[in-house]
Length: 245
Image (tube, rainbow, N blue to C red; front, side, top):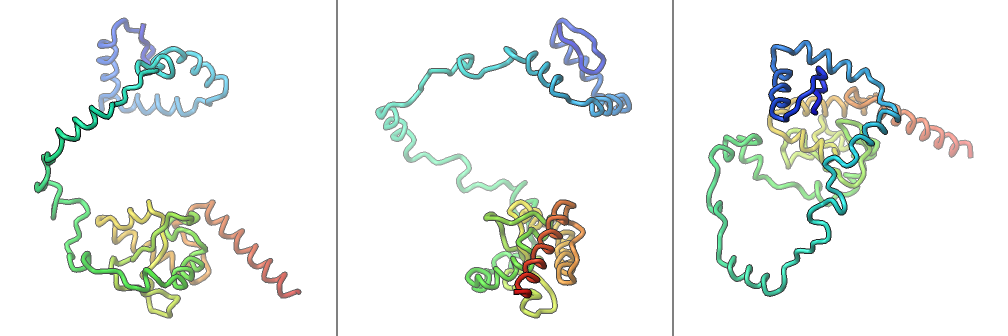
């Protein structure tokens, strides 16, 4: 017997159960679906409740260890079969060599940038090799992501706000505006996306201005704001301790 999680109706066959569940997914019954979801969220998932579910699932659709049909079977190719495969595949070309998908290439691509001169430009030597300049920007950002405020570790990128690779202007060099900021790899991909480019550009500029004025950026999370405040207090205490000595 199969029981429905929503209305607790029992069924003998899986087909009848699947057809019944489609009825619950219809847009006409949105109110009922929302009420059911809210009731599920209100349930407190205690340890006893989790143990009951775990015990009920033991032996059902479990393909680990000896129950796996491939357990203990080592299908390793011998050297002869490897040589035969290499001979048979030599000279073959994949079907997509020299072909392009017009639906996803060129102007139809989701990340297409119409300014091709901007894309083909090269980065400057200061951007790559001047480590002092990079370290100053990191210290200016308190070694945190400029967009989210998360701590920066090894995986980080220096992002150009206006996508101009030759424009390395920053307030550290006493310039009128800022165009550089360190980001995590994930946030860098978001900011580089063509559709959301202008929105993130405004946010990054506002965050840099807030850091110059001694304020915490609004786009940062509460946890990151509290951590930055704690770091500032620790730095002040260290400076005062050194002055006393």
